[in-house]
Image (tube, rainbow, N blue to C red; front, top):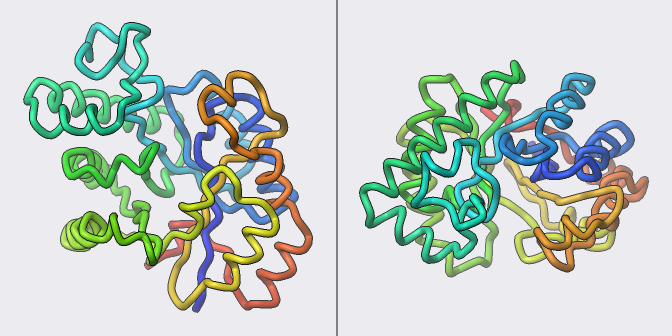
Length: 267
């Protein structure tokens, strides 16, 4: 069977993103959304998700370049002067690995994000991380530590064939997930096109889908705003929404015999 999972990340970052995710699910092929539980429009996203029982919602863990759940004074080594999680990913990642106090604060923040998601009452379909930071071995350990006792079994594997620089990290991550009984997608498509998953690109990627499970992920919005542009400059968010609601994309998925799925469908 060829399963295809179509996920929108950053659910909760802005009302325009939330509205696009709802439209992409109701009128298109979007199957999943990953919720930023500490983002400004997270409560709007949760309310919207409750009206969309067939939308599979997961947790989009944010450990860098975003807003935390905990107050800044509880995690001073994770945040900058604005109270925002540090945006310099390489430096933040090194600090998480080498500094004990940073790891302790990171553990508290990740636990708080899981608890906040749990408080919504939504079933957690999957877990992934903003900027694929769950590739970081420390972040992954803490995510597994929080997910397992909650019965959350599905995590995104950000493996796109051809991304050779990530190959050692992907192999390590896959082995750790499988060794702990977690379930992940076989591959990811579209990392090179992040923020630019237009109809033409999605149609081309669909032709590459093989046996097993393939995830395509998106960052749609109903319109561009200054705040969204500041978060991710140059993203074609409206073009991505158009792709998700494209009759051509839907028809090609059907003609290729691809099964629209959520992570919960993976065994």
